Image 1 (spheres, rainbow, N blue to C red):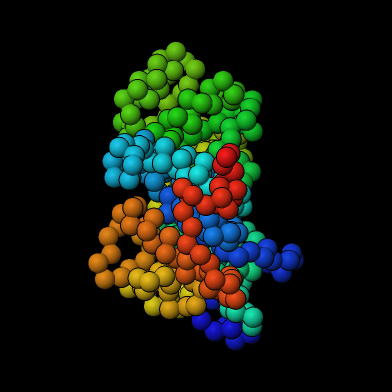
Image 2 (image 1 turned 60 degrees about the vertical axis):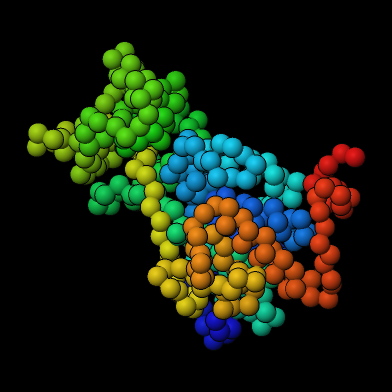
Length: 354
């Protein structure tokens, strides 16, 4: 990685309209390993910000198997992806990490003082002493509706996987998708929207039995519509649907919600000069640092001899990576090893009552 005056790495323009956010550490990825990275940094009194492409924390753990059981988390006989993330968020709460969700880190450049300047696709900028790539197999981004020109409606009448639904009050809403997220979104909109239509390519769904049963019940009661087909065009008032019997029908809409799942994109990380091996970042096994000083990689994004893609392994990597960062964040300070069972300092940081 060369200095900024010689090279800008990655794609996307860095906003110069605002002063960069200065931080000890920037974590790229808010999945379980990224969240535990924030916890380990917090124990060492290293402040951090967290960036993730998704609009919520959790990464693939929530998006792909949020309600499926997980049996290999130490001390936790069984949990779910969603349950694990909720516990991790509770665990890191005392350290107050700052989240920047719905953003992808696009640029990375070394500064003259050794710090790293990073910019996102939304114009945010960070000046960090250390960077932790916890991006799993890449940034998970929503799969897009494949209709020419429809992205011009983005953030106005077209949204993907929204968190809050209150903004759709009184509107005619079309939800495109057939999995749990799509059905649950459509069902939740019934008391909010003027009219709700679920649009899916066929009358078969990739969702839980109870969710599908609830959907069928609402359709039979007339409180929700089902449209079977694929969107092929649109105008200001209508979405044009190609049906399985080769007809084209018009579906009125004020807002369109895409719930077509998510897919990983390695994105700008591939352009950061980290000598990727099969789309993974090589690291040492002492600090889980990459070939670039101060840039660490933990979880599924990294590779080293004997690597196993398990959450518990990512937790171990995050622990050693946090300790590796101390020599950069506190270059003139010896950091003692402390235990949460006995350290009054750690109890204070964690807000533990004595």
